[in-house]
Length: 126
Image (cartoon, helix red, strand yellow):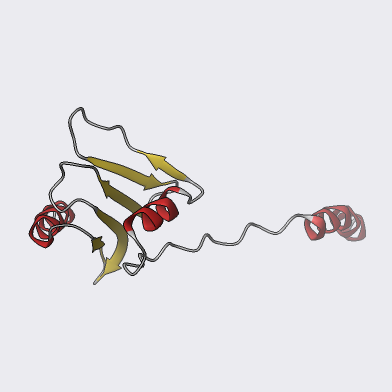
């Protein structure tokens, strides 16, 4: 009886050995502020799994979320404070609680960029 059970496992083990490897984890995009705005924005938009969030009418920002969560990007549009600018929000664990780390690249008005960063930071602390 025991030998029969072991023999029944052999085909399952063989199938498991032939199973494809899971895809490698996606490498997260690091914002390179030395790149021109257009180049960095294009890199953000070229990421597989990037999903645009619904855009509010008249809102001068485009929000994008990575499939599976954990990362989001904001690209400013003309009329936004600090435009042009690229922002990234990334979920992390600090002291056992979930936080959002915000980074960004300012290409336009620094005061406007700081205003948007302050706003994103306020969202992260809720």
